[in-house]
Image 1: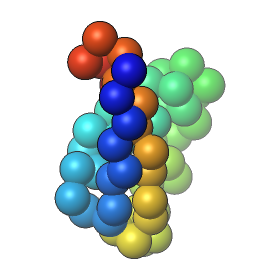
Image 2: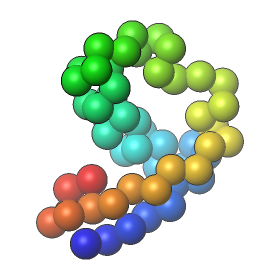
Image 3: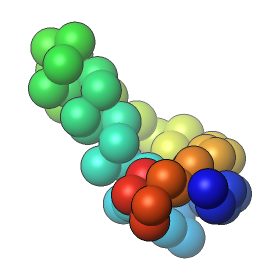
Length: 53
């Protein structure tokens, strides 16, 4: 298992793939409200299991 901090824009797309799966696809949250102006200054913690976030 590997842990990786994502800070702001650096690596955000990888974190958003997980958010999109969980919130947009599974919980049916509209994608337009899932991303906002704070994402570029937000910290995400990605956990990888067998190299899959």
